[in-house]
Length: 331
Image (cartoon, rainbow, N blue to C red; front, side, top):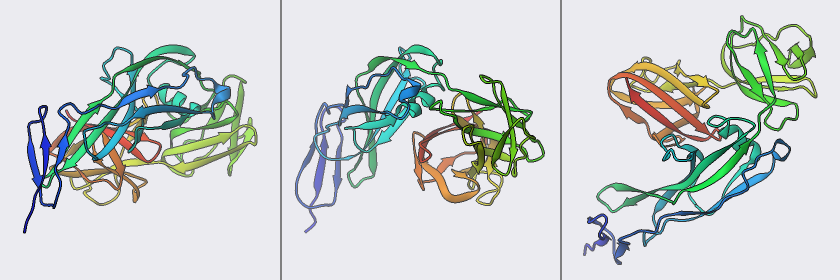
Protein backbone atom coordinates (compact mmCIF):
# COMPACT_ATOMS: atom_id res chain seq x y z
CA UNK A 1 0.00 0.00 0.00
CA UNK A 2 1.34 3.43 -0.94
CA UNK A 3 1.55 5.81 2.02
CA UNK A 4 2.48 9.48 2.04
CA UNK A 5 4.56 11.65 4.37
CA UNK A 6 3.29 15.23 4.57
CA UNK A 7 5.49 18.23 5.23
CA UNK A 8 3.22 20.99 6.44
CA UNK A 9 4.29 24.60 6.17
CA UNK A 10 2.14 26.59 8.58
CA UNK A 11 1.41 30.32 8.45
CA UNK A 12 4.45 31.88 6.83
CA UNK A 13 4.52 29.57 3.84
CA UNK A 14 1.01 28.16 3.65
CA UNK A 15 2.20 25.30 1.49
CA UNK A 16 1.28 21.64 1.59
CA UNK A 17 3.90 19.39 0.03
CA UNK A 18 4.01 15.61 -0.08
CA UNK A 19 6.46 12.82 -0.81
CA UNK A 20 6.11 9.10 -1.14
CA UNK A 21 7.46 7.66 2.11
CA UNK A 22 6.01 5.77 5.01
CA UNK A 23 5.19 7.08 8.38
CA UNK A 24 5.38 10.27 10.26
CA UNK A 25 4.27 13.84 9.81
CA UNK A 26 6.90 16.60 9.78
CA UNK A 27 5.86 20.11 10.70
CA UNK A 28 7.70 23.34 9.91
CA UNK A 29 7.32 25.96 12.61
CA UNK A 30 5.13 28.91 11.70
CA UNK A 31 8.02 31.16 12.74
CA UNK A 32 11.25 29.16 12.26
CA UNK A 33 13.99 30.19 14.66
CA UNK A 34 16.68 32.06 12.72
CA UNK A 35 20.40 31.42 13.28
CA UNK A 36 22.24 33.69 15.69
CA UNK A 37 25.78 35.01 15.85
CA UNK A 38 26.42 34.69 19.56
CA UNK A 39 30.17 35.21 19.93
CA UNK A 40 32.65 37.28 17.95
CA UNK A 41 36.42 37.53 18.53
CA UNK A 42 38.43 40.66 19.23
CA UNK A 43 38.87 42.23 15.79
CA UNK A 44 41.83 44.43 16.54
CA UNK A 45 44.04 42.67 14.03
CA UNK A 46 47.81 42.87 14.41
CA UNK A 47 50.55 41.58 12.14
CA UNK A 48 52.49 39.92 14.97
CA UNK A 49 49.40 37.82 15.72
CA UNK A 50 48.86 36.86 12.10
CA UNK A 51 48.83 33.09 12.72
CA UNK A 52 46.33 33.35 15.59
CA UNK A 53 43.00 31.65 14.86
CA UNK A 54 39.84 33.71 15.36
CA UNK A 55 36.51 31.98 16.03
CA UNK A 56 32.98 33.19 15.33
CA UNK A 57 30.34 31.10 17.13
CA UNK A 58 26.72 30.78 16.07
CA UNK A 59 23.57 28.77 16.68
CA UNK A 60 21.71 26.92 13.91
CA UNK A 61 18.40 27.66 12.29
CA UNK A 62 15.50 25.67 13.77
CA UNK A 63 12.65 25.08 11.30
CA UNK A 64 11.14 22.36 13.50
CA UNK A 65 12.75 19.44 11.70
CA UNK A 66 16.11 18.38 10.27
CA UNK A 67 16.95 19.76 6.83
CA UNK A 68 19.99 20.33 4.64
CA UNK A 69 21.50 23.73 5.43
CA UNK A 70 24.48 25.82 4.37
CA UNK A 71 25.66 28.75 6.51
CA UNK A 72 27.43 31.90 5.33
CA UNK A 73 29.37 34.19 7.66
CA UNK A 74 29.09 37.60 5.96
CA UNK A 75 30.32 41.15 6.57
CA UNK A 76 29.80 44.61 5.11
CA UNK A 77 30.36 48.23 6.01
CA UNK A 78 28.12 49.21 8.92
CA UNK A 79 24.76 50.50 7.76
CA UNK A 80 25.12 49.22 4.19
CA UNK A 81 22.41 46.56 4.72
CA UNK A 82 24.78 43.94 3.25
CA UNK A 83 24.31 45.36 -0.22
CA UNK A 84 27.93 44.36 -0.96
CA UNK A 85 28.25 41.48 1.45
CA UNK A 86 31.65 39.82 1.79
CA UNK A 87 31.44 36.07 2.37
CA UNK A 88 34.10 35.28 4.97
CA UNK A 89 33.46 31.55 5.44
CA UNK A 90 30.86 28.92 4.60
CA UNK A 91 29.98 25.71 6.45
CA UNK A 92 27.19 23.18 6.87
CA UNK A 93 27.19 23.96 10.61
CA UNK A 94 26.75 27.25 12.45
CA UNK A 95 28.60 26.34 15.64
CA UNK A 96 32.12 27.45 14.72
CA UNK A 97 33.72 29.53 11.97
CA UNK A 98 37.52 29.74 12.27
CA UNK A 99 39.94 31.89 10.30
CA UNK A 100 43.52 33.08 10.77
CA UNK A 101 44.12 36.75 11.59
CA UNK A 102 46.28 37.16 8.47
CA UNK A 103 43.61 35.64 6.21
CA UNK A 104 40.83 37.81 7.63
CA UNK A 105 43.01 40.92 7.43
CA UNK A 106 43.85 40.22 3.78
CA UNK A 107 40.18 39.66 3.00
CA UNK A 108 39.03 42.87 4.70
CA UNK A 109 41.72 44.94 2.98
CA UNK A 110 39.70 44.42 -0.22
CA UNK A 111 36.90 46.52 1.29
CA UNK A 112 38.34 48.63 4.12
CA UNK A 113 41.41 50.89 4.57
CA UNK A 114 44.67 49.60 6.04
CA UNK A 115 46.08 50.94 9.31
CA UNK A 116 42.65 52.24 10.28
CA UNK A 117 39.57 51.16 12.23
CA UNK A 118 36.26 50.59 10.42
CA UNK A 119 32.78 49.82 11.71
CA UNK A 120 31.65 46.51 10.23
CA UNK A 121 28.33 44.64 10.30
CA UNK A 122 28.39 40.84 10.60
CA UNK A 123 25.63 38.26 10.15
CA UNK A 124 24.91 34.58 9.62
CA UNK A 125 22.83 33.71 6.57
CA UNK A 126 21.55 30.19 5.99
CA UNK A 127 20.05 28.52 2.94
CA UNK A 128 17.69 25.70 3.88
CA UNK A 129 16.78 23.14 1.24
CA UNK A 130 13.62 21.02 1.62
CA UNK A 131 12.78 18.25 -0.83
CA UNK A 132 9.22 17.07 -0.33
CA UNK A 133 9.01 14.88 -3.39
CA UNK A 134 7.62 17.62 -5.61
CA UNK A 135 11.02 19.27 -6.10
CA UNK A 136 13.54 20.94 -3.82
CA UNK A 137 12.55 24.30 -2.34
CA UNK A 138 14.98 26.77 -0.79
CA UNK A 139 14.36 29.07 2.16
CA UNK A 140 16.67 31.73 3.53
CA UNK A 141 17.04 32.85 7.15
CA UNK A 142 19.26 35.63 8.44
CA UNK A 143 20.54 36.35 11.94
CA UNK A 144 20.35 39.69 13.67
CA UNK A 145 23.23 41.99 12.72
CA UNK A 146 26.25 42.27 15.01
CA UNK A 147 28.39 45.39 14.62
CA UNK A 148 32.05 45.58 15.60
CA UNK A 149 35.04 47.87 15.11
CA UNK A 150 37.67 46.19 12.95
CA UNK A 151 41.26 47.46 13.01
CA UNK A 152 43.33 46.37 10.01
CA UNK A 153 47.06 46.46 9.44
CA UNK A 154 48.78 47.31 6.17
CA UNK A 155 50.96 44.74 4.47
CA UNK A 156 54.63 45.00 3.45
CA UNK A 157 54.88 44.68 -0.31
CA UNK A 158 57.19 44.04 -3.22
CA UNK A 159 56.39 46.05 -6.34
CA UNK A 160 56.86 44.48 -9.77
CA UNK A 161 58.91 46.95 -11.82
CA UNK A 162 58.56 47.04 -15.64
CA UNK A 163 56.10 44.11 -15.73
CA UNK A 164 53.74 46.06 -17.97
CA UNK A 165 51.11 46.91 -15.33
CA UNK A 166 51.12 48.30 -11.79
CA UNK A 167 51.10 45.26 -9.49
CA UNK A 168 52.57 43.94 -6.27
CA UNK A 169 52.80 40.94 -3.96
CA UNK A 170 52.34 41.23 -0.19
CA UNK A 171 53.53 39.64 3.05
CA UNK A 172 50.49 38.74 5.18
CA UNK A 173 52.64 38.17 8.28
CA UNK A 174 55.30 40.79 7.59
CA UNK A 175 57.95 38.09 7.83
CA UNK A 176 59.66 38.42 4.47
CA UNK A 177 57.41 35.83 2.82
CA UNK A 178 55.44 37.49 0.00
CA UNK A 179 52.74 36.13 -2.31
CA UNK A 180 50.09 37.34 -4.73
CA UNK A 181 48.49 36.97 -8.15
CA UNK A 182 50.40 38.68 -10.95
CA UNK A 183 49.91 38.94 -14.69
CA UNK A 184 53.21 38.33 -16.46
CA UNK A 185 54.55 38.00 -19.99
CA UNK A 186 57.45 35.69 -20.73
CA UNK A 187 58.83 38.33 -23.11
CA UNK A 188 58.77 41.05 -20.40
CA UNK A 189 61.29 40.54 -17.56
CA UNK A 190 60.78 42.43 -14.29
CA UNK A 191 62.42 43.13 -10.94
CA UNK A 192 60.97 43.32 -7.42
CA UNK A 193 61.30 46.48 -5.34
CA UNK A 194 60.95 46.60 -1.57
CA UNK A 195 59.89 50.27 -1.19
CA UNK A 196 60.41 50.27 2.59
CA UNK A 197 64.02 49.10 2.46
CA UNK A 198 64.70 50.51 -1.05
CA UNK A 199 66.10 47.15 -2.16
CA UNK A 200 65.63 45.77 -5.67
CA UNK A 201 65.68 42.03 -6.37
CA UNK A 202 66.27 40.23 -9.63
CA UNK A 203 67.12 36.60 -10.16
CA UNK A 204 66.82 33.40 -12.16
CA UNK A 205 65.99 29.72 -11.66
CA UNK A 206 64.09 30.43 -8.44
CA UNK A 207 66.95 32.34 -6.75
CA UNK A 208 66.59 36.02 -5.84
CA UNK A 209 69.63 38.29 -6.16
CA UNK A 210 69.90 41.79 -4.70
CA UNK A 211 70.35 44.18 -7.67
CA UNK A 212 70.33 41.11 -9.90
CA UNK A 213 69.24 40.79 -13.52
CA UNK A 214 65.49 40.98 -14.23
CA UNK A 215 63.40 37.85 -13.69
CA UNK A 216 62.18 36.13 -16.87
CA UNK A 217 58.78 34.40 -16.42
CA UNK A 218 58.56 31.04 -18.17
CA UNK A 219 54.84 31.45 -18.98
CA UNK A 220 52.45 34.21 -20.02
CA UNK A 221 49.26 34.91 -18.06
CA UNK A 222 48.14 34.97 -14.45
CA UNK A 223 50.49 33.33 -11.98
CA UNK A 224 50.70 33.02 -8.21
CA UNK A 225 54.09 34.51 -7.43
CA UNK A 226 55.83 33.75 -4.13
CA UNK A 227 59.07 35.38 -2.99
CA UNK A 228 61.04 35.07 0.24
CA UNK A 229 63.54 37.83 0.96
CA UNK A 230 65.05 35.89 3.86
CA UNK A 231 66.18 32.80 1.99
CA UNK A 232 66.24 34.65 -1.37
CA UNK A 233 63.92 32.36 -3.32
CA UNK A 234 60.95 32.82 -5.63
CA UNK A 235 58.49 30.61 -7.51
CA UNK A 236 55.63 30.79 -9.99
CA UNK A 237 52.49 28.63 -10.03
CA UNK A 238 49.98 28.80 -12.91
CA UNK A 239 46.69 30.36 -11.76
CA UNK A 240 44.68 31.01 -14.92
CA UNK A 241 40.94 31.22 -14.17
CA UNK A 242 38.60 30.89 -17.15
CA UNK A 243 35.09 30.18 -18.37
CA UNK A 244 34.18 27.04 -20.28
CA UNK A 245 30.86 25.65 -21.47
CA UNK A 246 28.41 25.40 -24.33
CA UNK A 247 27.60 29.13 -24.02
CA UNK A 248 31.21 30.24 -24.56
CA UNK A 249 32.96 30.87 -27.90
CA UNK A 250 34.97 27.63 -27.69
CA UNK A 251 32.18 25.52 -26.22
CA UNK A 252 33.50 22.74 -24.02
CA UNK A 253 36.88 22.82 -25.77
CA UNK A 254 40.06 24.53 -24.58
CA UNK A 255 41.32 27.17 -24.39
CA UNK A 256 38.93 28.60 -21.80
CA UNK A 257 37.91 32.26 -21.86
CA UNK A 258 40.51 33.77 -19.53
CA UNK A 259 39.45 36.07 -16.69
CA UNK A 260 41.46 38.95 -15.22
CA UNK A 261 42.07 39.62 -11.54
CA UNK A 262 41.22 42.77 -9.58
CA UNK A 263 43.61 42.85 -6.62
CA UNK A 264 41.67 45.67 -4.94
CA UNK A 265 38.44 43.67 -4.69
CA UNK A 266 39.95 40.18 -4.79
CA UNK A 267 37.69 39.17 -7.68
CA UNK A 268 38.18 37.64 -11.12
CA UNK A 269 36.23 39.25 -13.98
CA UNK A 270 35.50 39.07 -17.70
CA UNK A 271 33.16 40.72 -20.23
CA UNK A 272 32.20 38.62 -23.26
CA UNK A 273 29.40 37.50 -25.57
CA UNK A 274 27.61 34.24 -24.71
CA UNK A 275 24.97 32.18 -26.49
CA UNK A 276 22.16 30.14 -24.93
CA UNK A 277 23.82 27.38 -22.94
CA UNK A 278 25.83 26.64 -19.80
CA UNK A 279 29.09 27.75 -18.21
CA UNK A 280 31.52 26.72 -15.48
CA UNK A 281 34.70 28.17 -14.00
CA UNK A 282 37.99 26.27 -14.35
CA UNK A 283 41.62 26.71 -13.42
CA UNK A 284 44.45 26.23 -15.94
CA UNK A 285 42.19 24.76 -18.67
CA UNK A 286 41.70 21.54 -16.68
CA UNK A 287 39.00 19.74 -14.70
CA UNK A 288 41.04 19.05 -11.57
CA UNK A 289 39.67 22.35 -10.20
CA UNK A 290 36.27 23.58 -11.39
CA UNK A 291 33.43 25.55 -9.80
CA UNK A 292 29.71 25.29 -10.46
CA UNK A 293 26.43 25.34 -8.56
CA UNK A 294 24.48 28.52 -7.84
CA UNK A 295 25.59 32.15 -7.99
CA UNK A 296 25.97 32.44 -4.21
CA UNK A 297 27.17 28.90 -3.59
CA UNK A 298 29.82 27.63 -6.01
CA UNK A 299 31.48 24.34 -5.12
CA UNK A 300 34.05 22.02 -6.64
CA UNK A 301 32.41 19.98 -9.37
CA UNK A 302 29.07 21.78 -8.89
CA UNK A 303 26.32 21.96 -11.51
CA UNK A 304 26.67 23.97 -14.71
CA UNK A 305 25.25 27.52 -14.69
CA UNK A 306 22.62 28.25 -17.35
CA UNK A 307 22.67 31.52 -19.32
CA UNK A 308 20.79 33.02 -22.27
CA UNK A 309 22.40 34.77 -25.23
CA UNK A 310 23.86 38.22 -24.64
CA UNK A 311 26.87 40.27 -23.63
CA UNK A 312 27.80 39.67 -19.99
CA UNK A 313 30.11 40.95 -17.30
CA UNK A 314 30.94 38.09 -14.95
CA UNK A 315 32.79 38.32 -11.64
CA UNK A 316 34.04 35.46 -9.48
CA UNK A 317 35.10 35.52 -5.84
CA UNK A 318 37.14 32.46 -4.85
CA UNK A 319 36.96 31.45 -1.18
CA UNK A 320 39.86 29.46 0.30
CA UNK A 321 40.76 28.21 -3.19
CA UNK A 322 37.86 25.75 -2.90
CA UNK A 323 34.43 27.43 -3.14
CA UNK A 324 33.11 30.79 -4.26
CA UNK A 325 30.37 33.15 -5.39
CA UNK A 326 29.77 34.92 -8.69
CA UNK A 327 27.72 37.60 -10.39
CA UNK A 328 26.53 37.14 -13.98
CA UNK A 329 25.16 40.45 -15.29
CA UNK A 330 23.79 41.02 -18.80
CA UNK A 331 24.98 44.34 -20.22
